Every structure is written in structure tokens, then in C-alpha cells.
Amino acid sequence: MSAGIDPDPVTSSNAAVTQVCCVVVNWNGFADTVECLHSLMEQDYPRLTVLVVDNASTDGSADRIREMFREVEVIAAGGNLGFGGGCNVGIRRALEMGADFIWLLNNDTVAPADTLTKLVAAGREKRVGIVGTVLLYLANPGAVQAWGGGRVLRWMGYVEQFTAPRRFGNDSFLTFASALIRRELLLEIGLMDEGYFMYYDDLDFCLRARGAGWQLAVAEDTAVLHREGGSADATSSLRMERIVTGSGLRFLKLHAPIPWIAMTLFVGSRIGKRLAHGNFAAVGAVWMGVSDWRAYGGSVLPKDA
Image (cartoon, rainbow, N blue to C red; front, side, top):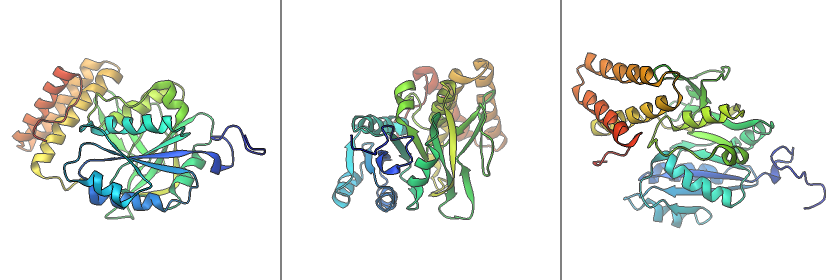
């Protein structure tokens, strides 16, 4: 070890010795992923490596990304593993590489050049395990999409996103559209739960971290632009109805005070709202999500996706 270097890179004031690996999951998202990677190439943080995990894209995006960004390692997941599964492929590789922090970043984000420096600065407190990011709408950068994260009502799975500074309590979470996770936390509580194909996986991880005594923090001076996922077609919306239902049921089974009551309220509320709007296709998709949970204990990618 060189003289004058703090032996604890995470708590040292010298950010240059703290190694960070950013994990970006790609699935048929070439244009978004390229824009995200360009912003990562401009980060002013001195020790950043970038991994792209490709969830079996069919648009050739993995090979095109390899050609455009020779400094980025592209890992083939071998299938569409969902968000948590794809992240875990990258997290395992990052831990092998000795990363002190792993930065999970959605491929449909754009991070200003000082983002990672601010995240690492906010993560230097000893018991801070995860640092969240202020997310702004890409189409409307003046509006806050999430102030780091939000909270979940564990009696029925209702999720509220914070849009202004709030105190983070026992039911709070950080959204993993952009979150910096400490190595020691991952080694203590494990990786993301792959029983969630998408959604509720970040809530689950944050509650597990809080249960192990780790703290959540928000780098309040960050401003990452995040594309709003509101342009999905009707078929995609039905897939999401199904996936969210299966994920929500898994989450409540694991974390609700009285799971069977919370799960009943969750499904009843989802079906009731869709019946009230006459959206019978969505009711069917919710019920398919219930079937997924019964069969697999969580959410799955529908066969027609």
C-alpha cells in the first residue's frame, strides 16, 4: 500500500481510491443505452468502470454497444433475466473486480458529469449502505420524478414516490433507477431477489438492508434525467399489469405485517379499480399475475413478451 493512502477507501476523504463499478442492464434498448453510456463516459469521477449486462436482446444492440464502447465490458446474461437478475449478473462481476461501490443505473437515464462524485460523497458515512439519486423527467427536467425513492404501505402494497425532501423511515426505499450500493452491504445481505422479474425488487432490497441495520441516504444535489415509461402500447401495459401483480404479491408475502390480509387488499384494489374503468383486459392480466405468484412465488416474463 502506498504511503499516505487511507486503508479504508470508502470512508477516506480521498475519493480517487474508492473503486466504483456501474451496472447498466440492456434489453433491446440500443438508443437509450448509448445515450446513458455517453453520459457515463463524461463522469468526472476518477475510478469508474462500466458493465453492460445484455438480457438476450434480439435487436443486435449488444454487439453494436461493444463496437461503440470498447472500454465497456458487455456481458451476455444468456436470457431475459429481468431487472434484478440482470443486475445480479453485473453485481457478481463487479464484486469479483473488487469494487467498493456498485452503481445500479437504468439504461434510460442520463447522468450529469458530477453525479457519481456526489453519490460517493454521500455514501461515506459508516452505516450508509445505499445512496439514492434525485431523478428528474427527461422530457421535463424541471419536474422531480422521485426524490431518491419513496415509501410503501405494507398493509396493501401501495407505493408512494417522494417528490421533495422527506425523512426516510422503516417503510422507505430508494428507487434503483439510480442507486449506489456499498460492497459490504451486498456481502452481508446478498444480492437482489430474482423472484421479482421487475418492480418491488428495489423495495425488497431496501427493507432487507434496513432490517440488517444499514441506513439509506439521498445525494440531494444530484439530478439524473430519467425517461418516463408512459409510452407503452396496450399489449405492453397488460404485461406490466401481470408482472406488477406477481411482484407485489411476493413482496407482501415476505414483508407485510399480516400477509394474507395485505395480499387480499392488494389484489382486490387492483381488480376493483380496473373494473370501475371497464378495463376487463387489465382485470384478466391482474388475475394472470395472481396465477404466476401461485405457480412460481413471484413474477415472470409472460411467454408472449
